[in-house]
Amino acid sequence: MGRAVTAAAGRFKTGDRVKVKFEDRPGHLRTPWYIRGKSGWIERVYGDFLNPELLAFGKDGLPKKTLYLVAFDYSEVFGKSQGPKDKVLVDIYDHWLDALA
Amino acid sequence: MARGHHDVGGLPGAGAIEVTEHPLSDWEILADAVNQALGARGIKRTDEMRRAREEMDSAAYRDMTYYERWIASIEAILIEKNILSKAEIDQKLAAFESKWGEP
Image (cartoon, one colour):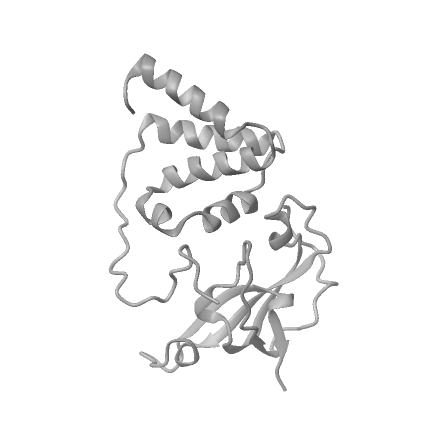
């Protein structure tokens, strides 16, 4: 796949508030079930990568999608917090995210 | 909408993760070699293999060990791409079994 050097396809920057789409469809989806529908923020922008949802069907993976490290409060994801500073960090592609005001 | 059989992150009651080393059988090493060779030849990609595992029958998925899932997904992708047929694979398997006995 190679290392991404650009993030031209992405809509978000570090610190932006985002909500993960609660979607499901057949195929290879890299957004884990437990994080769908949850709200967090962009922790890091990794860059643009071939879309694994298309690669999974033998396609070329284009157009590329920006991949982010997205952070969530532990309590947002699992309901109860062992420590208020705990975060859950998940790699999520741009098309799985909606902007939050 | 439903959680896939592979997508168990965050489920309660999963227990502790088994982290001890476990030796690989010869066929498991061979499964890895076949997988890498098919990748190096550009015949399949990792994401296709993952889809094949995620699409398979849930009961069968849960019954299989890690490398059994690899073999099953390699078989599914090779059949999907018309590189091998199910009949060819079954025929070869029967030939091996008659030569070497039941696996």
